[in-house]
Amino acid sequence: MGVQVDLVRTFTFRNSKQTYTGIPIIAANMDTVGTFQMAKALGKHTLFTAIHKHYTLEDWKNFASTSPECLEHVAASSGSSQADLDKLSSILEAIPLLKYICLDVANGYSEHFVEFVKTVHAKFPNHTIMAGNVVTGEMVEELILSGADIIKVGIGPGKFKSDFFAGIQP
Image 1: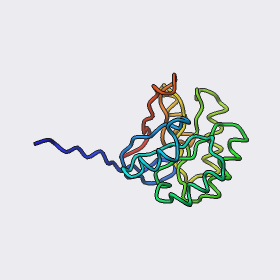
Image 2: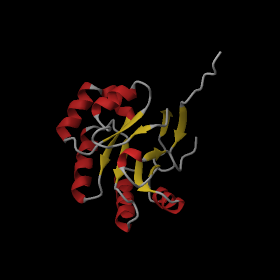
Image 3: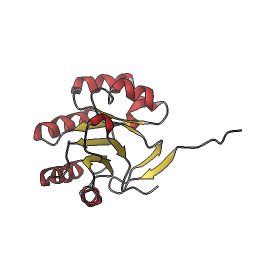
Image 4: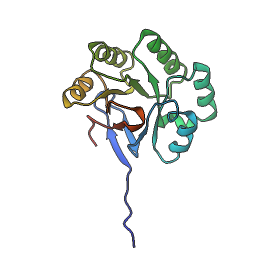
């Protein structure tokens, strides 16, 4: 007789104060993985998908209208430019059920990125923000103190990177 393992966990995020219950595995926001199709498949199992940033506002509206049950397990992704912030803002304003944001840069070790995390947190204080990519404890702490709740850990080829929930209390 095998042992059943329960992977479902509940987290309350430090900055957004949101609570998440599910399996804390996130499909990365790469354009081959972080798709609406993946969100539909994984959301059935309370797995999370960080949707890639290449979808248009119209794509998001269509997804939200045809798959509203998936919205609680997806994050809208953004880079760190003003144009990225404008696009992210339009998506979050059009789809108020979205509560997760993924701020993604290849290397999170810049003052610009830290300031961008602070800006996004100030603009969307009730959204849970995942941010990265970083590899040191010091930078994890810096991003958490700047408003991120989940830290993307790992710098290198995208398909080998792992995303971890960090800085949260179960």
